[in-house]
Image (cartoon, rainbow, N blue to C red; front, side, top):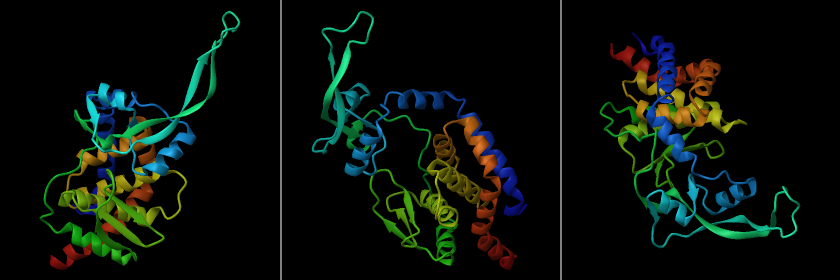
Length: 270
């Protein structure tokens, strides 16, 4: 069976495996862990992004300690605003006797600034060698689209990025060869699909679903990373499945475009 014929089956497989993941104990543990983190105001989100653009999970010094982790020595705090809440002495009976009287700056730290017990995760980086030379083939695909590809020491947990303005894709240096292959397929999908987009979560779901189909078609199993990534950005099993089905045609066409040079090479070698 050719890669082209297998793609509808691969998308069906992706939705099935995402559904299994989001009903698992592993997923529940992940959600329980995530629930311990505050939902920050829009203003504080901007403050966090300005001070540490790569921040993912943010908590205070003592909160990290309760989670079995400690802030690394020498790490610089991220400063956010917390309300100063006081009790009213003359509050009416039954009324809320708390009142906010200003705000103060408090320090928080990103997960990357801490060490200790392993963080629950449903999205695990791949480990292994690129024995088939898939990365080189994907670089050629990116170049055919007018994008350069370069290795970079990217910040935080970023595996790769795609700049339409600079027509450049960057891939994290320290990752394993097959993780770099998977990431490059993901970023090429962004290059094709997302020069303009309004929904970041949908864009990430489409790019990772495309990467899953491309990698599976080329004989590389990316499920340890892709399933959790898709489910996390979509917000759960049902939402992920609905989004994959809604974007099915876009994902299939993009995967076909990325895979076409590989299939042409196979035909010439046959």
